[in-house]
Length: 268
Image (cartoon, rainbow, N blue to C red; front, side, top):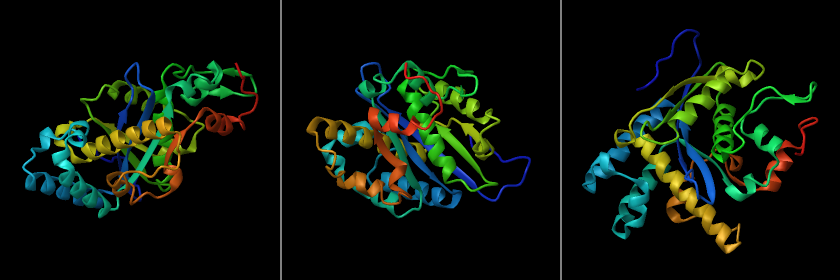
């Protein structure tokens, strides 16, 4: 399932593994999260991850983040996995939004932030976007984060679990971004692939980070305290973050501030 490079020579290859939480119909929030890095660090992380699971006698195929986090007797295992991640230079990213904040945006605003192309000169959209799917906003912003850390002349390959419900969404949106001739970052997009999460430690890490980040979002909203620190485990997973901007939860106001520079974008 690993894509091969072909054609033009590139300086480096970045692999990014992504997962999501909160895409079910009644979810209060939606988040896409994962890690990017070069092949060497990913190989080291894979070896360490498998070694920890073997030591705790947990089959690779039976690791599921949600179940592990809820089991108090697995705290030591999770802490060792967190330490393994901290020791490998793979870099976390995530983008989350509360569902009610997303739907406070106007239809035009939701179209724009979910990938629709706005022609300011003609005053119209030339593509539709996905204005009823907050997942597309989170996914779009995560693609931007990864490509922003991908050097010119290099390629970023993206991996999603084939057993995840968003595989179809990912394929459609990924192909759309690669086709945007006006976007210079499109040349940084490599291949997209869908390995099985039960066989892929990198996807299991993305699953763990996504789930913990989603829970942290809900905890902060419930307490009203946006300064509450992450758990010890989540801090370990954030250790190699390249920039604070790479991991963010966005409100209606922050999204509107982000798109306020778009010329003539309708407010309805």
